[in-house]
Amino acid sequence: MTGWQITAIGKILKINATEMLEDVDSAKVKLTRTLLTGEDVSLYTGEEKGKFPIIPGRRAVGQVTELGSSSPLFEKGTRVVLSPVNPCGKCYHCANGNPTECYDFSIAGKTTDGFLKDFAVVKTSAIFPLPQSVKDNEAVFTDDIALALSVIDKLDMEKGQHVAIFGGSVFGSILAQLVIYYQGVPVLIDDNEQNLLNAKKSGIYYTLKVNARTEKEALAITGGRAFAKVAYLTRSGLSADLAFRLAAPSGRIAFAGYSFPNVKIPFPIALGKQLTTVSVTNGYGNYEPAINILANKAVDLSVYTLPLTKMDDIETSVGKMAECYKNKQPLPDFMFNMLS
Image 1 (cartoon, rainbow, N blue to C red):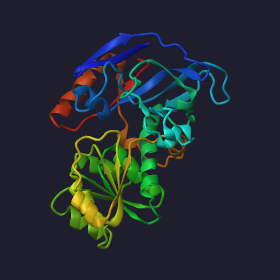
Image 2: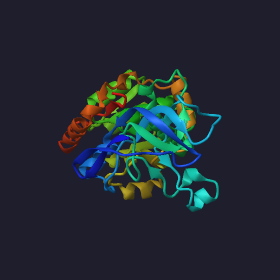
Image 3: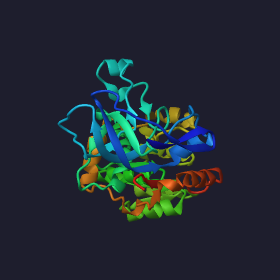
Image 4: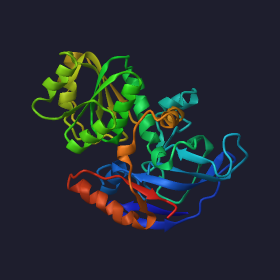
């Protein structure tokens, strides 16, 4: 196995190691695409605390090359997407048959090695077969779709409800598109013109740029009513005050994201309005529905297509991401061709 390992803050090195099948329930997967995002660079730059050394990369797709035992779902050559989160199997919820509420998920690229490598050995319960209609470059977004489905579930959204979404990243766009798919009305709010333009190209009708008029414009869309459902993307960089001001009394706010940087919450507004807040940090349990969403073309990812980057350019690309991150510039994602 050839991989890239963060050995300390700001240091990433190419490594070679051997990965063998662990037991009868494991599979060896030749990775074909790995997506590197802001979550990975936040660990690399030290914004998020992590245990080093660790291989980054939360999202990947590949092909099964070896199985610990025969399986009705997989055979050699099966295209699969890999789940980055897996329940611990030991906590109270896991022991009582409710792993979706696990206290201590393992997270690829954060608490355990991720997928910035050419081969991965994983449990067969952590891989999901892909239909031919879903291309590798789309499948790497399965985790975002699964997370968005978890957000919609936790918000308990009803048909026809307006949902304010704070954050216009690809995840914010996917969430807004799924709100439409489930017959809600998303209002996407961001401070980046390009993010809002991309969202519009993806079919999001209501997009608002953060300025002095945003609150008034948002309420005009709903006919003067505040939002019973609000989703705040934790890495959006937006002030949470506006999100809480736009929330209706007894409304529900979902904090959604894979990590929680320093977000300041206006508790007086939350308490005064008796708001319910929930946290959604992964899409565990929603991978099969997410793949169906992709297969049915229910989300438009065409505007978010990324050029393929060769493995030889991994260290340079991570450096570029870190530079943008430190300078507070828009952070590019990198799609790596793990076959090159």
